[in-house]
Length: 132
Picture 1: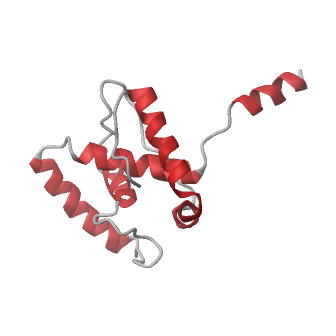
Picture 2: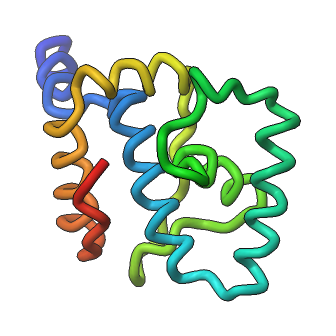
Picture 3: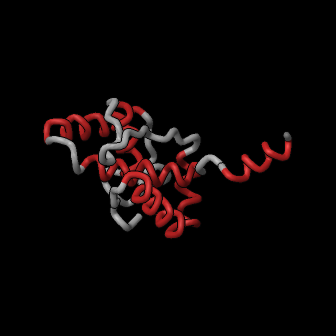
């Protein structure tokens, strides 16, 4: 029986924080494109508040893109807005340590981003932006 458990464990591993970070960022960017203007205004207002409330450090916590796609995903989740990925329902990932994930992504880069885009396309039939 232990052998079966080990085999199952090898077949399915939960995604890494880096993968979930990129997934949330890609899906947040995609979701924002499908929200009405009135909702977008609320999202941007809440985003600004969350950045201040969480004492976000621009050096460690924000990427080059503004608004930062990861923090957009946090804002959307905070407002109760689920990801918009076609007809299939899904939820946001919880990232244990976003700073470590962001730092590791800089090293893993394009391969992980390509995998996230491929997985979203395969599972949801939705193409997300091809650059990370």
